[in-house]
Image 1 (cartoon, rainbow, N blue to C red):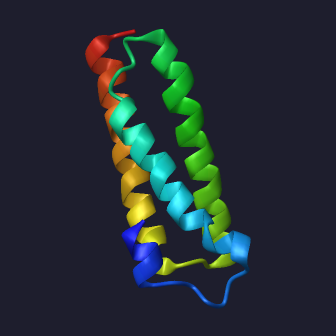
Image 2 (image 1 turned 45 degrees about the horizontal axis):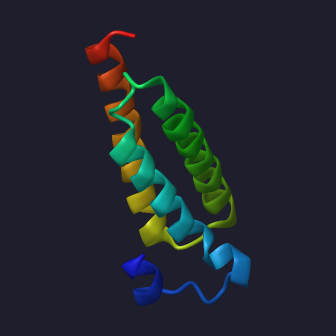
Length: 93
């Protein structure tokens, strides 16, 4: 969120300015909760949030919004996806 205020994107609409920080928050949530796949309830919490973050990231890439946050969001999403896959195979559901 700090980068949103440090590097604001003045060329985008007001709603579009909030998409990259929202994607950061969603990807961070997925990264923090994704390793708990052995709880079925967390599968219902973590996976939809990750899919929403991926969708917002694709939207941000298509609108060319805030390249610094897009790069960070891509790293967060890849890390969350990696943790999800690792925990899926480690806990063997």
